[in-house]
Length: 591
Image 1 (cartoon, rainbow, N blue to C red):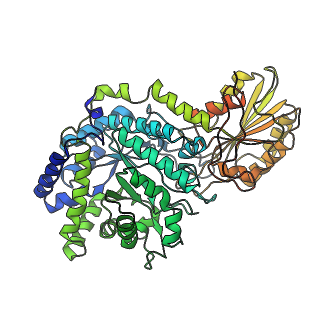
Image 2: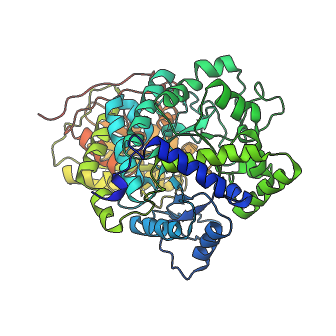
């Protein structure tokens, strides 16, 4: 078995040896080296030559700035900054072998083992091609099976460790009780804090069993907000009593399950901190609530310091220093890591941060590395990656979650699954919120072919906010001549987009297509992504929710519509005007 699988959070080097290594290493570090341990910059996992500007930048951060580790992203490609056709997507997936190779190269340069992290909320496949991609957290909420959630998280941890990535910035512990939340949404397990807590605890146990560090986010709770902190600062206007009974419930469950880290959000709590500072800059929040009230002793990590919510408030150096003063141990993804390090050093020189405060955080960072056994084995076996990342067994677990999460919230004519003869004509309409940004999971690429395979006499068409009035008229005319209409409705709540709705003309088109439905002509809508979008088109006779995008959700939805799998998911949220929490009609699958 590869070396990276021989070490787990539960079975590391003996505690005494680990403590000895931590203290010996801490004593050997200069002040500059200690400060560097508290800063976590980023790199992308696409091909990077050793003789390149980007690799030289990363190497300098390791050798000259002594950073403690990196957050690993997928990749990006440039897009033309044009008007009239702003439809190009820039985000791409990284590559597993390149991610691991870059990690190994940087580990060899570093005096202290690097602690590497990634946003693998729904699996390595979220960022890295070939990794297993699981459904979004809300799909797990619809299944409501902590044992299955723990099994999935264990796989996520194992795949991450195979790539040399040690810390997963997951699970999301936010209670999404605000339907207008533009950034958490399906990233949350749901709106019932107790059920969310049970799944957060299961994910935490699973990640740790897989050998990875689990990170609860976004403290003190990002679910009851309507502001995307990638764009602006959100406010939680509640006191500690309310936080204790709702927002903190999943965090307490995760801490009790052994969570290794907590990520602090860019959120103001005016009833906690009268200075109205973002939580990452707020000592009453970070230290007062998280350390003292919740008794959390693990790593505290800031949310990305490149997000507009804090980047607009403080320069990189000042922001990093304020976060450390507040009680953070790791400054994540600064827009200028070198400036962040210099800012912390300047704050120490002014006396704003004490040497003891720095040692406290460095000791936690080193302890996390020792708990993972990185002082003994820091490199990963590139030859073993293909045996441990992806694969049929891992995908089977992801498929089980996806299929069990399918939630039928409405079926007024009892037409799901569709009972259509194979020769019947079906109009398949992909309904997009907007055209731009569909780079990784092109909408309908699996759903449409799967339905056409089952009903060959089908025609597929796509509409969006850019569809003209005459084109909408054409769609209506085509629908009136078909035996059935299936709508795939794709609505995103995407970080940094500021959007989470259908265009008004698009919503009206859906309503007009719904009006064509009858006992003889079924109309079925499948919602991919934002489930709250169903509240804007409530006149649809049949609604199936998937909580997700991509091939897995689309394949499961096609099988559910065709009656090939049971439908048994239940809403982990309430959808205004459509259905309450726990709603869900059940349908048996084919015998």
